[in-house]
Image 1: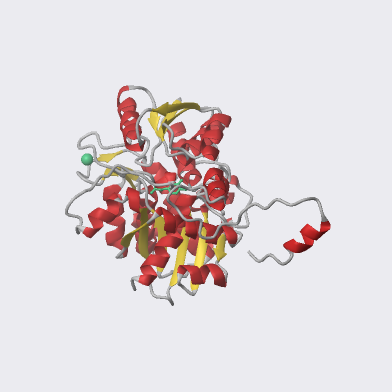
Image 2: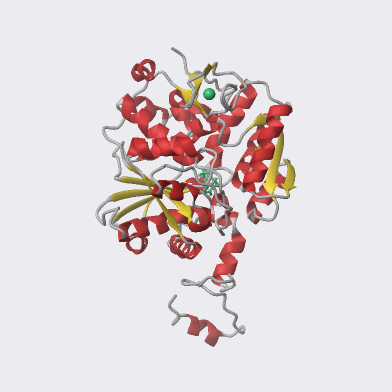
Length: 429
Ligand SMILES: *Cc1c(COP(=O)(O)O)cnc(C)c1O
Ligand SMILES: [Zn+2]
């Protein structure tokens, strides 16, 4: 049986090249459902290893290298790729690891993607599908990185990009990218959740293809974060994979990836998934505490703008991911996020605020005894340091109202004198 689209609520099926992005019968989320029994003989660890030595553009991409698990049958002519993925899996030095509270910490840096966030892995999947269904315009609501990524991939594919931002809450680097890549860029007077609702209505009424993370082809691309990191580890499964949770597309994708890899026999056990939310944008955490009795929504408020989402669209798939992986959810304050970010940055790795929620979350989960100090932990850094230079400058200048700049590295000013330079050598930061 070929892969198809399947509603996770009512089970209704659609052909893989249908334009649909949410179930027509019940409004439910769609999965790209693969026939794992048919795939099993077609893929192997050796196949993926072999592709690492190939110059075929599909093999070079850290997404399409695993194409059987993303969109089987895709051709090189169809794929809209920038060679995304292939991101570094850093091993944290002793200082950062001890800050997090674990001896073994690795950081998968998705900020090393072409536009600076993991969204590129989803967008190569989504824009490729836009081309397959013959779309001419694509649209997204975005806290910033989705728009930067969609603007770039749409430009490469020759499609019109419409990006809708919630007014006033998008980090500078991201808006700049969207304008630069030529997207029609619009601020909506509302928050992210209002903006997404408007975009979904527009897609129902107008000839536009939706590229928010409810689009299942984006999640198929994002699955490769987990596939690639396991490949990099020689398929050695960590105890924990830790990810920030906003709209929960990544959380959903990670769960599906792990479930499929396990069913296919590429891994012999499942890691546990830990999803970390900001305290001011914690609807999943609230539902988790309630034992999933209530689907909470909140008015979201956090400096980590990429996860400033109060009504996550992929909630049901994230809950499924947590069930599959015996996962946990936690929340961290903006203070904890920015301090963890300062530690990741000072280690020479660097990331944007939302990404640092992972290390802050690990610290908390170790404190509470959920993660053991001897556990083998991989955190996913979702975005690049330069996405949000404003947060960096204000933190180090001690200029964030209500927050301590615990690890500030303040700019110094000197006279042009050798004595003053010599004095700097005694400075210890
Ligand atoms: C989009 C984004 C997130 C949130 O991911 P979801 O899949 O929406 O949960 C986190 N960090 C960064 C940098 C992002 O761009
Ligand atoms: Zn349905």
